[in-house]
Image (cartoon, rainbow, N blue to C red; front, top):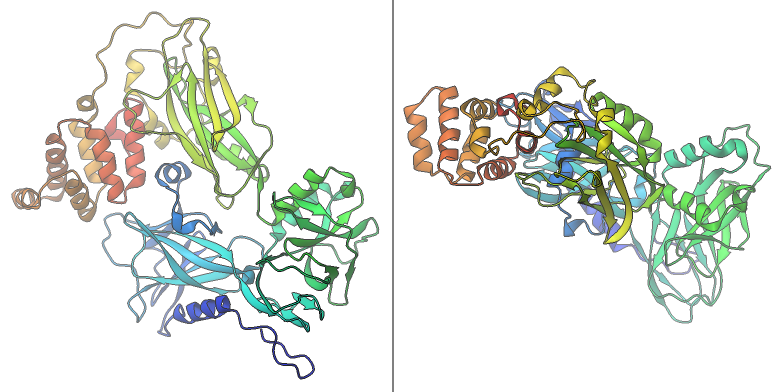
Length: 603
């Protein structure tokens, strides 16, 4: 925003970054045609001339399916995920109707933003997927929702990066007022710089929900933060010769009658290591409830109304609380759940969960048939957004022989409802003393922790899946129960009778292939068999010979698989993923790893 002071020419140039954002917002305005936004679930709406909620749905992308398929995108290097990932799809997989479009021929989508933050400080975009390709799309912010348009999509997420403003600092002084929020001010006195200099400023907003949660947890002990400002940053090599006056509005969650007698205003500054350190700058509060202070170092400044007892804590603990509010980091636990425990293996669910979400997540896992391994819960871990945790199997744990997974890892996404990955581990034949399965957890090759599981405790967890819903239990039943009793530990079982190795032909039965064929509509079947190297001519010949849809689908898939010489399951699951059937692909892969019955497969 250009400013004038007593007739002086404007000191603050209009930000090129802001201009670009304004242009993008105009570009993403929804054309005015008769219609409305209709809710399709998960806080997502589609623009249509009629209600489409009974035809199209938005569903949260199942975490382990997402974790397996997600690959870091260089395009997102400077972006942060603001929402979970969602699938947009017809409720009936066989429904081939197109998504409703506006007069410009595009799909218009509105997404409710989940966090209690000042989104006006952020440049928001939609990260959308169609087929195997991801792309960024411009979005418009209005209140707590963003709207965007796309030609096609089947999955989405909202991402953000700080909105930067550029200014010129003049030797004779100037005043900067943020366009994103005119309560943010910086007044440069004459002589603050020797020559005209350019700098950019941006604000990282506070998540008021975290401020509120921390207050509820610790206010009785006088250890809370009652109010905190958003954090102001500068970029550039500006060296100030004099202190400047900074004004930052406070985010306050106090009750109207609440006393702040045991609290003081303090200025914190983030250092190069990312930690907020206490400064000795004097902070006052004006009539607009805005924090005012003077400093010769603007970048990384944030004001807190903090309890006097809180200030007695160690600097790292105080910094951690402030960093969490600004979204720089989260306090997490890694949890280890087991299910389908046998003497030969078990299914592991490994989760990285923010502490505040632990209780609800554990209850959800129990309903799925997974039992928390209470002998091991990680220490508190401080994670930055989007870090990747690598998982290595040691001891008597190994990947199953026919597993198509090449690596085990998990990405931590703070705004995801769940962060977990599931996989089957095999218990290798062992001597009595080698009874421990180990999961080694690392981050950027740095040791995080290790989980040590005593396989002699199998009995304790053998019935972990007893609370699973019937439909899930059917999916996870294993045909290998013919060779051993479920839940028997190594020391209890009799020597195993040699059994012919479970092969791909044992798995890909005609009933199993038929079950898969029934779950694919015509378009998905066409993509799948072509991805299995069936020719167009062969496809047309089969369709002409078998006009019946059920027999046609079965023959297409069976023929495509029979033509493969090896790695049939791996190629089938890859073909399904390419056809955007990731959920079905993962179900098939898991049943195969467990040597189960393919005819029970479900999406």
